[in-house]
Amino acid sequence: MTNVDYPYYFNPDLGEDINKKINLEIMKYAGMYVLKLIDLPPKEGGHIFEVPLALEDEHLEPVLDDLLFHGLIDIDTVRTCYVLTQDGRNYVDKLIGEVEAYIDKYQEFEPTTKVNLMRRDNINPLRARFLWGLYDGEFDDLNEWQDNWQINPAERVDDWRFVITRKEFYDMLFEHINNMEVLDDDALDEVLRQAQEDRRIEAPQIQITRVDNTPVNVNYPREEVVYETRYYHDPYYFNPVYDPLFWYIVF
Image (cartoon, helix red, strand yellow):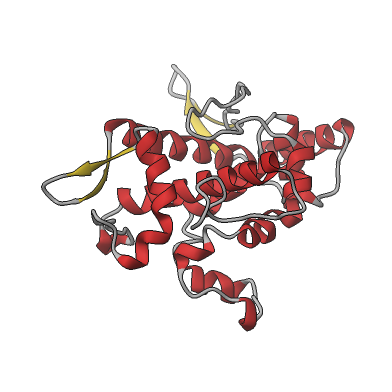
């Protein structure tokens, strides 16, 4: 890698700032992937990054240096490998909580509605898409992922380290989101109203016993969970607020 500012991508037709932003985005997503690998034991799909790095892992040195700089990993001098710091463990827990909140709130909707609801809730759907795939194991085997996505054999990358640091990987992952149909508020409100009605109808009957011990059956609606939408704060991720123009141009 000849330039620390552009370790994974450079397009001479783009300005320096855009090239740097693209590399930062790639490194932040790849960093989340690496944190998952460090967090898991090898028998559960994790990976040990030795110090000094093994030859095959040197490609990820800029990512690991970035995680080290932000205090999310450190070097275990006894085991001579990278390990999560307490801040790193807290960060992983925070990411898990974030994506589980997305799943709880949006999983029942079809993709177009899901993306439009996220945008309305000030959630970056691209970040949510990546975290969702990372959480459910979609990217655990990137060779299988390329099979599922029917990647042209001539364009396939066999080493997962190079897959997660390629702009093309994120282009494919985010293409459908960037080109998703835009739904207005009225359409989204109607979808939410119908979903609430469906949940009410499908709610199971629960037998309640009165004080006088006379049993009655009543329709007892499932409790609705109220979410307070806020911009998520992530000190590691450099672009925490969804910027559709930037993402559409870059990815």
